[in-house]
Image (cartoon, rainbow, N blue to C red; front, side):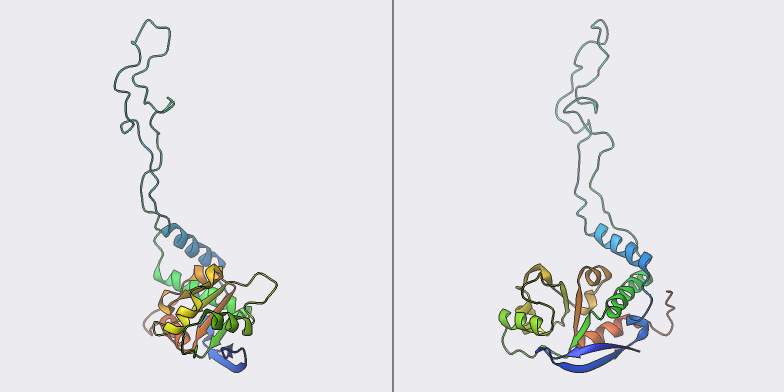
Length: 223
């Protein structure tokens, strides 16, 4: 088992949490993480890029000059690709950039990312965010108390894993800009873990994450 530090929202130590070695203590597979992250970024592309072929460019229906007798090269249309303002040959067209990524590969990439952050002691557990009303000031104070937002320097990027019922915490943290990202436990992925410096779970979302990444007895997990 691997131990993860547990703290209160005020920054006080509350012991540690034992987590499975198979999820937070494996040797990170860099090649798989690279492939899965590339696939995620590719899938996020809109794929709406488009250029016009010579058939789609307006004009050019008439032959610019007669075939013979002018001393110039023969031309059939001023919208051919080698003409300025002509169509584009072999240009991009709308398409999907999605790459097929096996489920086991996604799991291994996420486990590798979690293990990498755990090895650097960049994973924290806060049992619960026990605020009664949403206040951005409380969220900033909590990050400072946890050592994730120090004055006088650029704050680290923090990934908060919150449950659907953590409405007060969600509304407290959501206005802190791009340096603080909120995600549901069932949406946790390798890219978001790797792009952030810190990973903060609640007790409930940690349990959901472990249950999600623990393979069924009939499943084989290749690492």
